[in-house]
Image (spheres, rainbow, N blue to C red):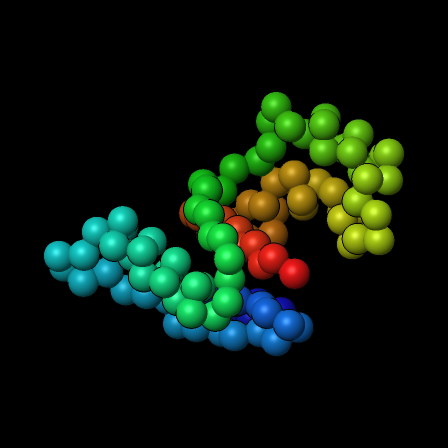
Length: 106
């Protein structure tokens, strides 16, 4: 559960790790910050990490809803709850600027 602003939650094996946000030093770039986040993710056993801007699905909205309707989400019933929040992350986190997606091979 996210309670405060500016917290990052990394979840692995049903455990959550809350981390204070990285602060950019005067001479640090966003590219360097991304590299630091990716390095920490690798240290935690995360296989792949990606960054994207927070924005609602536009072109893929209909595809996502059809995908849900066809049951392609399998046992992930949580995807069916409040699909508009899955389509537009700003409904959940209005101040967010970036989505960080993580993948773990199992």
